[in-house]
Length: 218
Ligand SMILES: Nc1ncnc2c1ncn2[C@@H]1O[C@H](COP(=O)(O)OP(=O)(O)OP(=O)(O)O)[C@@H](O)[C@H]1O
Image (cartoon, rainbow, N blue to C red):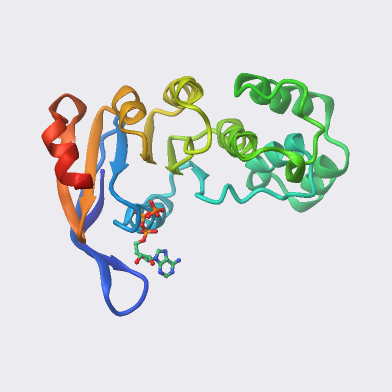
């Protein structure tokens, strides 16, 4: 599916990325790499609009996790399916989740390594734990595609590998901005490098050599 066709992407008058075309096939796992400010979030934001316009079910992990700090981890996970139900059902779920919903959302928290923290308020969790709640919310939501803005940046590399495998198993297609090249290599089928307003490379992961990484970050 073609998500972008020679698009100029930015926030004000000056584009951050110019002439961007992007086609993604079902089953692909894309890692977006690039220095801070290279436009990974800008690209993800445009892709989000393009995926929405196609009416596909999508799970999102924004860079700031976008959790409700005063609510428990479990209730934040339950929010992953708010738009599947009407307002009354959602209100009831947030006040007193049904046993089945609780069990299902709790199982997802277990899978991301947050056993025993379902009823803990998110504001009291560590950065890495919050990130895992945001990932659990996306896994609980499910969908044809996940878009994530550095969703593994606050966990250690081993955890990141394990969480990346969960994402891989749960979503047919994934597009994640990533900062750890080793985790990106392990996760992605295709890697896109952004530099100075353009796509420096767009390669199958096997084609990602050290020289390209040096040029990307150098
Ligand atoms: N919401 C926004 N409103 C206005 N400008 C923005 C917004 N988000 C990003 N920008 C600008 O777009 C440019 C690219 O930033 P972007 O966040 O896309 O890069 P990034 O590669 O995701 O960086 P990082 O790795 O630091 O998150 C920057 O100049 C930034 O200031």
